[in-house]
Length: 137
Ligand SMILES: [Zn+2]
Image (tube, rainbow, N blue to C red; front, top):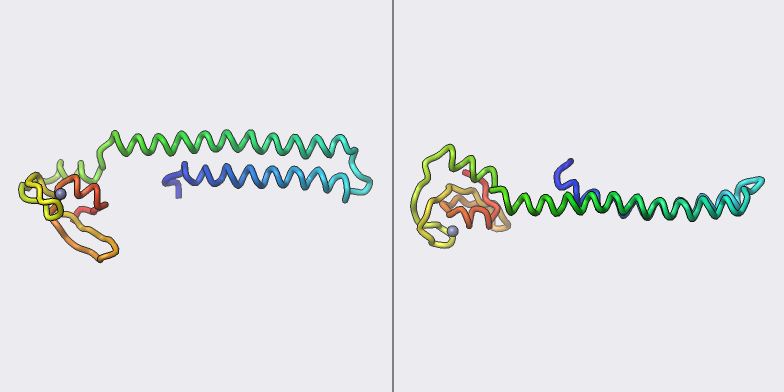
């Protein structure tokens, strides 16, 4: 629910902005044309224009926050090694051999690969493990 919250916040910022702009204009129009007796025209214009400006400015705040989160997540992905790979190295003795994907001779991980071709089990190097979105077997 809260995973990748930055992307969700971006959508929220856009929805917030659109609803706020439309709602403010609708409120101004309704208060002048529908309400009996009508509210003073100047107040209606102030409500509509003020609401539009407030909606846009507040959506910038939400959007900026989401942008920071998205960039922080990307940075985190680059700087911090994948936790399942790290725990694998701590728990088990590394096994040497030839990667079944790229053929490189190095430390291998028993990996479960699930993709459009189905589920396969392979012994792969850490680069192939990360590149193919594998799970530990
Ligand atoms: Zn490999």
